[in-house]
Each structure stands twice: as C-alpha cells, then as structure tokens.
Image: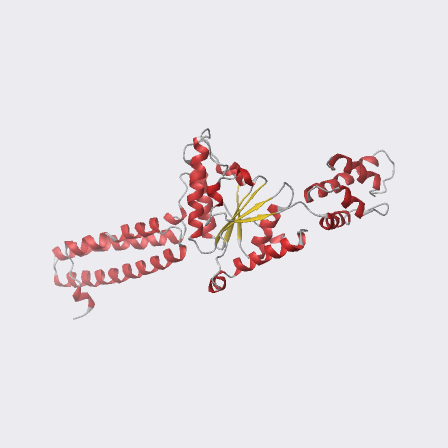
Length: 371
C-alpha cells in the first residue's frame, strides 16, 4: 500500500484541504513582523500543497481509468484549494501578498517608499565630533553589524536610538553614517509624505514605510524631528495626531520582534517627545549630540576653508574661539556666506581675483555669531 492509497477523498478531506488558504492568511496576519518565519512557513505550505497536488493527480488518473465519475468529481474539487494555495504563495513572493500590504490605489502603489541612496557617500571622516562620542557611535555600529555574535555575550542590540541635541549638530549625518557603516538600507520617515487629509490614510502610509524597510532588511528607519509625530500627548491634543502616534508605537513594537530592523530618531527637543516612545524596547538608547567644542569648531573651519582660495592667512583659532555656541551647520554657513561676500565684493571689478579675504569672513561672522 503506497501513500496514495492511504488518502481516500471524502467531504472531510475536502474540508481540510479548503482550510489551507486560510492557514496561509492566518499565520501571515499573526507573524507579519517576522519575515524569516513567514519564509519558512511559506516553503513548508508550498511543499505540502505540491505533495497533495501530486496525490490528487494520481487519484484523478486512477479514477479516469476505472471510470468512476462520482469519485472523479470529488477528486477535482480537492485540486482547486491546492492550486489556490500555490498561487497565493507565489503572489506573496513577488510582493503582492499580505506581507507587502498592497496599496489601495495606483497612486499609492507608485509612491511605495524605497531606501535612500545618499548614505553610500557618507563616512566617519565626514563627522567632526567629540572622540568619545565617536567611539560610542562606532561601538553601536559594531553591535548592529553582527547581532548574532552580540547576543552570545548576553548583550541586547539597541533596536531604537534617539539622537538629541541642538539644531545643526549633525544628527541626520550621524544616522546616515551609522546606516552606511553597518551596511543597513536607509529609510526616511517624512511627515510630508506620511500625513494625509484622508481618514486612516496616514496610518496606512506609515505601515507601508515599515513594510518596505522590513522587506529590505537589514535596514534602519530614520525619523527626523520625531517630536513632530511623537509629541507628548495632552488632553487638548488633536485626535488624528494621537492616532498616528499610537500606530507608530505599535509599529516600533513590531521592530523589536523583527531581525535586522532598527529605528533611529532625532529631535532638538527631547522634552517634547512622548514618554511612551522613550520607554524600554522602543527609543530607549538616548545619545546626546552636543554643540562642537573648540577643537571640533577648529576642524570644521579648516575643512570648509580648505575649499576656498584665501587671499591671506586666516587665524582659525580666533574663528573657533568667537564661534563658541555655534553649531557645525552654522560654521559651514559662515564659510559659505564668506564666499558669497567675496563674490559680491568683486562683482563691480573688471577682473576678479577669485579669492576670499578676512573681511569677507568677518562680515559673515557678524551675521551668525551669537551674542
């Protein structure tokens, strides 16, 4: 007696086979946050469907030879759910199954988010920050690059990181460098692309972004100005904003359960961020990015002025001293403004020298130096 003889088509077996498509949607709905589990489950379900399909075909051939018309009809009814399962699994693999959460219309489908390509050009050399802070960030990158080895030491890999600090301190650049050096796909959560005037559409846009990042894992989702979406809730807050924050919290909880998916958020006002976002398991790794110290300001000036044709020797130590309290972005803008001042100064001349003098820098300083 072979395997085919052990299976006798009946209404009971037909009912069991018809449950296979529901089984697929069931575990996809429950374990949507675990792509490796879904992949293994899809494989086993497809193998089961292929085996059942082979048995059904053999039974069908035998029924045809024996002229058993009633049995043939029942056997053919077994074949339909098997084929449906194979089609559904195949559809999921090409990205139109429930894992990818298909867009509700053509406009949404064309707007499916993808990873940023900018980070390929960003390295640690572009970061001029305190050495202690840089070492801390590099140690985090090492954890993200090899999470399996990290867990063998009993260390929890940080799934959510919150970068705080004044504007212009390089928080976005730091996030890009972390993603680039850890070989992570980089996704940006932009409020302009997420928020919609249609009810429920903002939550769907947010889900699509996380689904896309999950599909490109290992990856990181960068949330700039997280206080705009994760602002502390109050009794007088807008309902749509609270709904969006609650949905974001649910998605971040899913990140914790997903291998190779991380969230980095940045804010200038950590006090405005809802406490629920900063609790353990979410954005619990908080890193302060301070304004540049004297040595950092000096290096930033040297880096930016090196690109300019200077007409005279510039006292960079003096520039670093008078710009205390300014950010790296401010210093970069000061140097850029000095170049614009030189361009304007020489506009009335017949022949340009194409050089930047100290007076051009001094004029730029007067516009940006605080106090």
